[in-house]
Length: 194
Image (cartoon, rainbow, N blue to C red; front, side, top):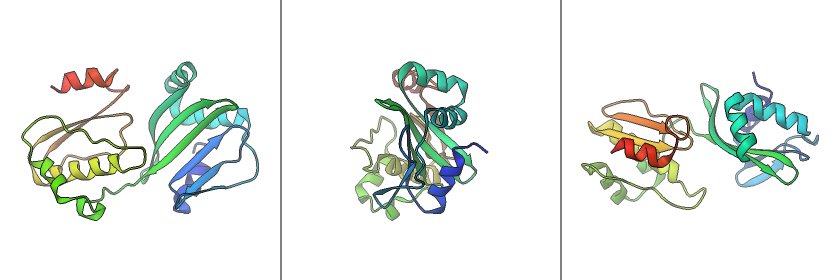
């Protein structure tokens, strides 16, 4: 088990949405919008380096070292997957881990307008889901793809950074491509999808 998993298990156990790690700060979780420390001890440079390098692997660690930020999905165990963002800040390394729900909610459960379901009936083309951070873009996209996957025989291609919700093929084929792992850029992945 990775050292970082000790903190991520607290996120899951307490029903939190996020874990925030930063050098010179205590680890913090976000629960119902409130951020609170989970211990008083500050994270040292050595602890931050150990935690972050351990879960992303040597190749991603090198990318982070070169570029100063890194996005990927971390699968802690079979039931816990996190959208992960590493970044450098003025006082050292920092990271945010957002818990990704394991069950994809339906469009109805999300309260999405019925008109959105009409996208599922498109015979081809490009659908963009846009909005500000935290507005539900990924969750909406996952629900729409799951609706298509359950009800139609189609081929759906997603291009993501990182892949958050994992779709198993049901009636449709869902091809999920991750940038930069599966394709070097969004443009290259989009060109290949056409």
